[in-house]
Image (cartoon, rainbow, N blue to C red; front, side, top):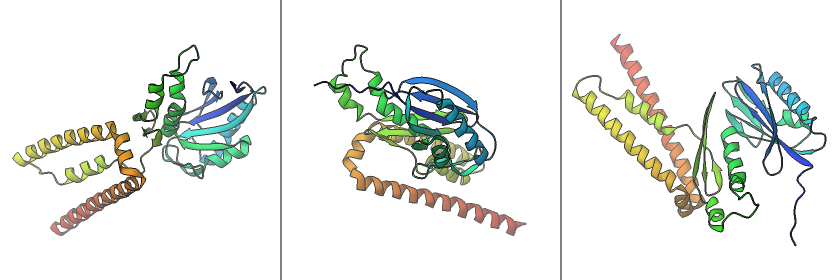
Length: 269
């Protein structure tokens, strides 16, 4: 017997806190946007700013008296702890800002807080394939449905802040550490020759290495879903921790090189 869910009486609220502008959107249970409003993000401490933004969201929600709100999702840049709903945002000057608790107390609804790019990737993962369905309402082809959970996608956000997330095998992954390529480039650049043929050879070698690294990264992203399936959860966890350790070693090398050069300069003086 066919069953259809009555989605008309319900809505969810999405809040994107940007460095300059905050967007508040109402959506139905199919992920379709019903209305969007924007308000300037207060350039104050997080206590005053969050009270103002949560109040704006509550007043906006009061317009929808014919629909029952079910959930509030807050997305923003910075370092977000989804478990506690706290955010560190250098651009706004926020440290351990209790975004989740303030919105939950003001709105009286369940609240989830996520990094803006993760939220975008998750929304596309949940709703993107539905938008590809034919207008007649018929289901997606079985091959397309099957491939939806195995596609690998890279989402990049670049506006006032920059962030990225990777969808592998139907799950959203975001970086837990900083970009290793930048750390490596700094370390190599600090050891470059100053003049002569060695300097030219250095730049040629570094350029070739950058191209090779880019090719390796492309191959890894292209076949990431297959590689993760072959490795398994344990191997993935080991590789992540090993990579973090190597990045720490690179950082220590940068520090040791800088201290050594500084001491040598002092002795020369």
